[in-house]
Image (cartoon, rainbow, N blue to C red; front, side):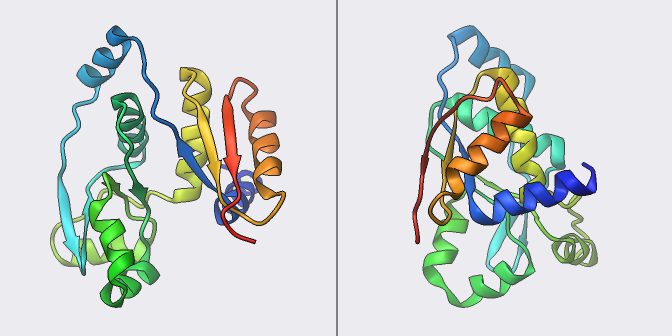
Length: 178
């Protein structure tokens, strides 16, 4: 990802969250995906949460697998600030503990895991993950829903994403705060 793309991704990620919707694929496609990607959980504990030991490509595959499963799931991307907040904020912690996928969005988490002798494979940046998921969703015809941001941001984000990925199917957007 070049610097301009990274800036765009961070900007969109800060103001919006992208939700890859549950997507029911034809039975053969869903079972093919399940055979190609066996969803297993290998996690390590850092503070109050467990983080999945996945690299960037595995994180994309996992999210797409979750989407194809037809279940509603949460994916979170903790960083060092989140680990501190998770110590005190029980509601925040409960969301993270219930997440189907938890990926390390911060090098301090990767470094800490190495110091504990249970190294995470790499940082999985939420903003980079968002763009990669939109790219994959555009080729797999997986619908995307944009959630969050100040007034007008979700439609602008949708327009920029469709400009970048012309076959991306954005089905809706929702503004959750002013």
